[in-house]
Length: 339
Image (cartoon, rainbow, N blue to C red; front, side, top):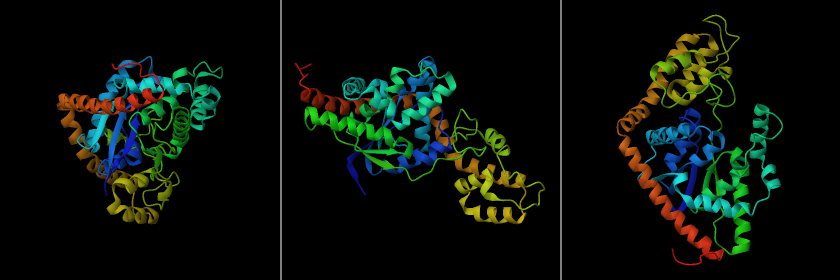
């Protein structure tokens, strides 16, 4: 199957290292998609600054950490174009143009933005002072990301659908005013559900302290899984338990599939203690992560290759964005003279 005439645009904010939730929910799928589509992967550093504007060193460091993570899981720079958002000025230009097409009230009604604003106000108070212009305009910036590269297929989860719909609205409005210029993107809905944390929380995340990171060492994996939530009703080693409420079993299903049926049956019959079950998971998890760790070690020892990949990817991405911008400016009647 080859759909190289379709452009996939996906992005990720450099706010920290990738964890298992990112892997099973997104990046493992990107690895497959890069074989079928023309793929652009954006390191969205500008969007990361909407929450980290006062900590630019963190964002800069994470750009490289995230790139190494992506390469370690199998993103191939020969198949996928990895680029840095801030190095593509055409995205910023499009954001300005699109901002004239979206009202403030529409941005506030975006379900994704509403949810995140509510979370911010719970943390910082109800006066709205914590909501910046850049944060509120995130959907406009994302529309610029997508259209700058003629993105026609966008891998998203359910929670991102309102943002994609906002992009489609902007595209339709722009085309209705300036003529057929921009391509309207379609969603490529993720089939994976959100991964639970080690503590049983419905979301795995850095702020919750319940995540297994792809860069975690064997020692850290040992410590994290040892403290993972199990069936609280199981008291004795030989007591039967319910694997469906046990996070150790939950992760066995991800990285120990060949033995998961045995794990389940022995757990239910009281033939397996939690300590032994955790030790088996620790072994399986480290085996799963070992190839990723090896690739990560290579790129950590060859930072010049990471630099080269980002430079070449960004150069290629900008060529595409310039082409789109030329058509945009022509149709907007602001192509006054050749530059």
